[in-house]
Length: 125
Image (cartoon, rainbow, N blue to C red; front, top):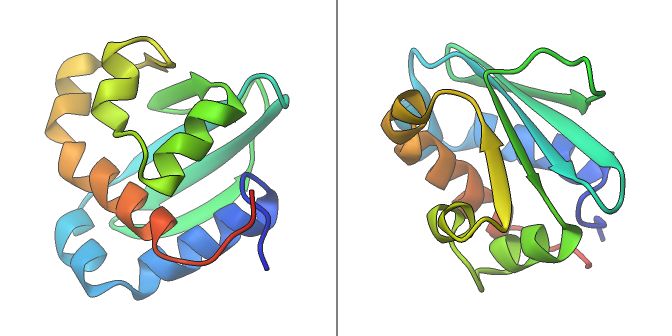
């Protein structure tokens, strides 16, 4: 089974997004780079979307991104288990975001689909 918040988890997420019909409709024409960091684990991963096609990679502090999401592993785990929603975690400051907030609001459908797909496959925490 895939361990959550590892390179294998993000690779599987990218693979499943690329195979997901709803994702293809939602993300058609979308290009963006998102870095997700679990600050307490000192792990960060890039989700790179180019015209709706997803690749993932390990990210470093200098990895270029349109948006950076930073939180603790526990908060990412609650999100992926469906115990919390991204917008609420951001509102209460559990996950911090760097990037254009107006642009982020326009991408909520895309971001929510990433979360739905991340929740959809077996993983161990």
